Length: 190
Length: 186
Image 1 (cartoon, rainbow over the protein chains, first blue to last red):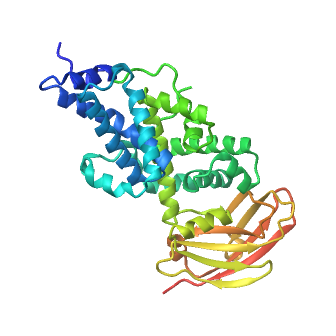
Image 2 (spheres, chains in turn purple, yellow; image 1 turned 120 degrees about the horizontal axis):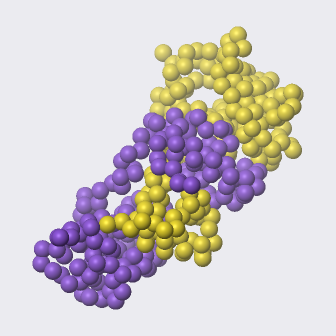
Image 3 (cartoon, chains in turn purple, cyan; image 1 turned 180 degrees about the vertical axis):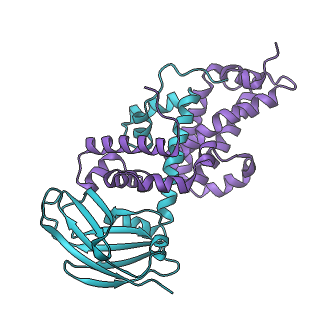
């Protein structure tokens, strides 16, 4: 049976890229990119708090990873996720130090159009979310706005609203469950 | 090929990670899991999209309800065009919204000493209930309560008189009563 890149586990994908087998390495690289670029972008969003910087990070890290694999410089192919995370950390620190480098990265690495918008972003209906947000209890809406727009951790939200940190986490949990249900996102299986 | 996740992260773990609530050890553990688990990474992507959507709505002034002063400052800093009115207890003020206003914010001054949360009741002509906010936490150091309404919503309203009553939950005495004479733009 012929295995396609999509059917292959992460370690075998990494090995296929390193082996550079004709006709399969390109597919393996594309599949590795498809799997991990969104995770690196999320890492970038979380640490750099900027969509453009996050996309730059994803492209830069994935290009470096593929180059290292091609050179046979990744020792533990089965730990490719850890390698990409480590690379993300290093590059993100560098990006934070040298913010101005962003523009150069944008011009240097892969063309922007190769990075498709994340599926979750494409599915979200902003009008529906607005309706869902308006249907939250007022306390819940305040916590959600401060968390996601204000980018404040629970302790800061608690200080701002005169609540305890534990209360903020409870309210936030309840609010997010209601929002997920309202906008029809998958719920945590319990 | 996505291997099944044997010990998925909980929604709370993902939220706490995203909201910067975790200590460095916890954060590193979550990240290690996310880079090994496509399923949980996809769930974080959903949470991220939800959070981005909320932020987008705020930046477009499409939020309603009682907001904190710090949040108002952030909205203005981000370029949200705010039409701001301030009213004292017992006062009646004229108000209008103009093209280009993203958000209308009313500052209701009140003595909030010892107050942890407030209720707001909004009524129209003939005491017709138009809206309410219940048990909204406020910092007792505040000198006012800020009520935000999307500009697009207010622009669609006809000229009308709005009565606003600010209450402490569980108490009958009002913290303040305010009247807005809203003038619709032709």
